[in-house]
Image 1 (tube, rainbow, N blue to C red):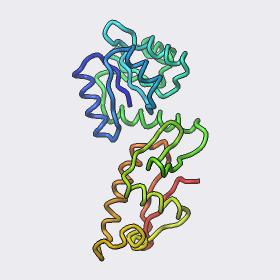
Image 2 (tube, rainbow, N blue to C red; image 1 turned 120 degrees about the vertical axis):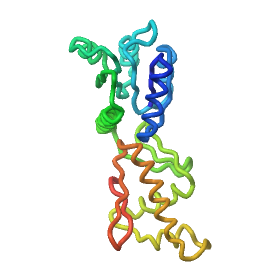
Image 3 (cartoon, helix red, strand yellow; image 1 turned 180 degrees about the horizontal axis):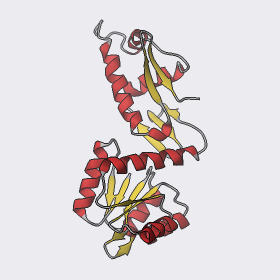
Image 4 (cartoon, rainbow, N blue to C red; image 1 turned 90 degrees about the vertical axis):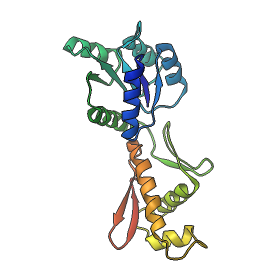
Length: 218
């Protein structure tokens, strides 16, 4: 997530709040720097203020769209008139949020736009064993060695639940016997990380008395 706002206090509040909502956030205070980052780096979405100092956030969005940058963009502004909102959408923004804003609403709007963008991308999520990452289009999710091993096991067993004991026996061989609750710990880690990438469409569900099942993999 890239937040573009020249007010350091607002940028800090937005970054801190969105991180608490599970997003990874980078900030930029200048339009030219933001344009370079958004052209070169892989972001899932951007929140761009209408005025970035003396520069126009609308012009930034127009330039990004002309350059083929198609990630979801939410415009942020204190201007609440219909004409102002229309100008933001005409510039190429996907949504327009008026200050003062509610972080819950902002996070919800971001999730909606990211999910919509994912629906238009070809292909689904894939495992990258070499880099221990889960990938989908330009989005990636870094995993620890053990997190990747658990996810890979569930992935290979997709279509049905995998028992906690089997996961433990296959991945924790030689560790302290009877510590199967470590599986629940890593399932929790994975669920938290997957929640950060709703566009992947993956979910680990608990099947009572049977174990864990990975859903969303074709």
